[in-house]
Length: 517
Image (cartoon, rainbow, N blue to C red; front, side, top):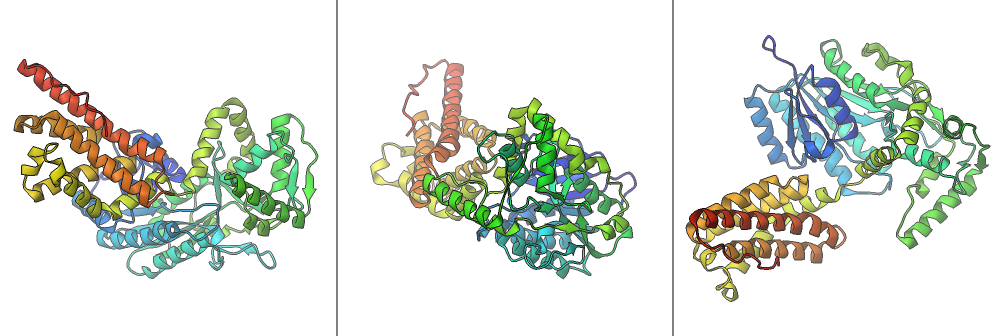
């Protein structure tokens, strides 16, 4: 490493909960290439001289390889911290597990080898070890990855992929406990707190004996553990598994007693619902939620964890990674901060946790972007045939005189810009293109109406196809907000550009009031 050069990290999942905190903690000491599916502005990460934000879908291996080549040309990378992944609380099979947890890990490992990195870190989870069946056992770093639900299987496969690269470059797997912040931001805990503080009829009900317990790890501790692996990389084994967790798990009844006391001033008496009744209640609530199309967060599968404990002994990790993890960041010490934030800033508290819950599901923009990518050539051809069709000769005379491959190229460019807008929420690229192309077409003698109609018809062909063929994934409101609106804004830019050109030339502006189709 050149003298004075900061060590460089490729960070995936940069827009996620842990990713954002990692950037804040590491950006003064590392150069970070932050890879994310959302824009930097959308997630509120501040600019920094040591930070470069890259919007990317890690399942797209070719795009990732191009970014990897660019990073190598700029001096390469020392580490990869792979936080990106998918989970939800539905606990059903979902292709996103394979794509987001397995395929992306494979792609990142391939690029790690090309970049000759010094260490690869995979964020995994303690739930890869089964604790819901049989006699409770203390989980350690050497516990087998033997849980069988969909998320755990995908993480187990990701861990297997990482272990297969042992000997090519150093690798570390970090199995995380339930990560929370002073704003909560951990879905199950948030749902418990809001239930207990709600005053609803079920606010005092605890399932079973209230002894279900898991370890909660503050996000600052999770980040500090990962940075510790980077800082002490040369002293660590070339391959190892670490447990990012406190020693003590906290039972639901303990959190209920402390949380309600902090919120109300005194703790009400909890009503303990025997496990069989609690399990039946979960099923009944889920059936009712299905009927009303408002399924609750709690699902029947959660019954198997009633009164189960996940106890962890992370002693090996503490010895291997000598970083200070402070007692004041344990949940029982931070719960006053969570409750105070909820009482003092309720809107922000609920908004942060709504985002945390939403991140568990595949975001609609990512789903639609994936569909648009798969259907790209078919939709480009549909638009091409529409513009070139005989009935549209009067609408697109200049486009019909254009060379066919040149026209297809322009259609692909607009389609790709529209797809990028859907993926990231950033409309500035397509608006910049609209201004540029309007200026060029104006010089070429195209009337504004022809360019406007080409944009509007293209958007309508795309939205109609998506709505008819993917009705569950592509709601009318989503298509209106993300495709039609972006196109209308682009058309507005065309109008402004033509009006400015007409004003400069001294001619009367054309009537640009044609409707958006």
